[in-house]
Amino acid sequence: MNIDALVEYITTTPLIWLILTIGSFKLGIIIYEKFDKHTLLQPIIISYVVIMSALFITDVSYEEYFKGVEIIHFFLGPATVALALPLYNNLKHIKSLFFTNYDYSCYSRSIFNSYCSFLIMGIWCRTSNYFINDYKVNHCANCYYYI
Image 1 (cartoon, rainbow, N blue to C red):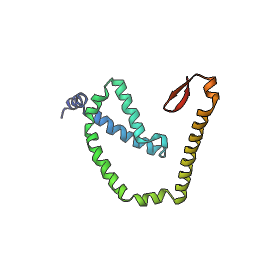
Image 2 (image 1 turned 60 degrees about the vertical axis):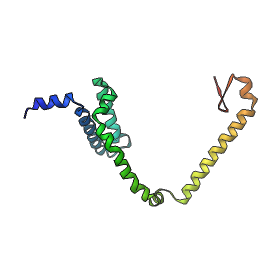
Image 3 (image 1 turned 135 degrees about the horizontal axis):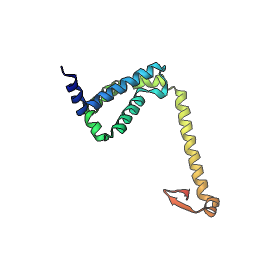
Image 4 (image 1 turned 90 degrees about the vertical axis):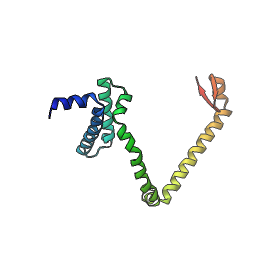
């Protein structure tokens, strides 16, 4: 087997981008596990940095890169659905693991309080002469902002 012909074939076809994508993700997994699964070293982040750096250095457009990895994009849709169906079927169990009734009451209170504070702030801004008299004010979508 001629190694030079294989290297020439890989580098002149879009196959190089598929190899780079899978290889960079594997590198990301290795780095992620080596650094005790640090949050900022997720495999997808490492992969993104490696791929974007390679595209920038080689001056290849994203469209050309995407032609090489279309197969991943093609299989990603069915894989997402295959993962989503069991999650949806077990939604009650998953919610019970993460949320309790106390959590729901805290969330609803915080959302209600945020809404009330925005409502009060909007009413105060509309009725206050401080904003209207001291600054040039523009009116956009029922909110005031400064220029």
